[in-house]
Image (cartoon, rainbow, N blue to C red):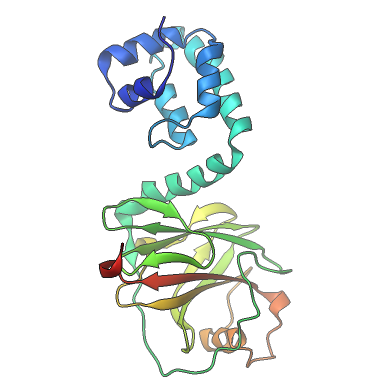
Amino acid sequence: MRHLDDGAMLALAHRDAETVRYFAEHLAHPCDTCEAFLAAHAGPGLLDGQVDALLLGLAPRAAAEAPLDEVGLARVRRALHTQRPGLRRWGLVAGGLAACVLALVLLPRMRVASSEDSSANWTGQKGGAARIALELSVVARDQSGGLRRLDPSGPVLDSDVLLLRYHATEAGTALLFEQREGERPELLGEFPLVAGTHDLQGPQGLAGVSLAGETGPVTLWLVGSAGRPPPAEAVRELLEGENPAWERSELAIIRFDVRVRSGQNRP
């Protein structure tokens, strides 16, 4: 009797007909050995969400054969959910972005004269107390189309494109700024926010921040409000600590830093 292993998962990923037929029948019944393997392995190059989709794809289309999904895979998914929560969380991020990557629209950037940045005390990632609360994750898409989740202040290449995914507690509007070291924040665009977890996108599709021509520290600011946002210049001054008229508690402000290096110097 065959059980799931790295070789079997690779064959399933390539939709090998014989392997698909065998495990479609095998996983129609509970198998502790296969479940133990899935609980400890994500498969060759697969996120656990992709493993779920792959195995669910083995299920017969006929309603009479539904026990594969209802019995065998239900136990497998429970094991996956409990064993690798972190991987699943970011698998959803990458999956959502990958689904929209063909509609990617690069955001233009405008350059202005340098000025001193006084916002270094903000650590970002989560917006503070606000009428709308935001969380942000950033994914880099490389030249080959591969996606990888970024940690704050993590390294990226100047050939990468940054994709943003947010979680908002309610609907609203967000302004996205980019800031290079020693320069003022520059507005990249205004975007609608939808309650829940979504990719940041506008009317033309998924928004992407190109890093072409960048080097060194780069900061992205996502500023959300439950209604219409204040004027961009007022927000820019707020980010620089120059405008006391707007209280930070009225807006959700998230900062995400990256360090850009040239792809030509890649080891």
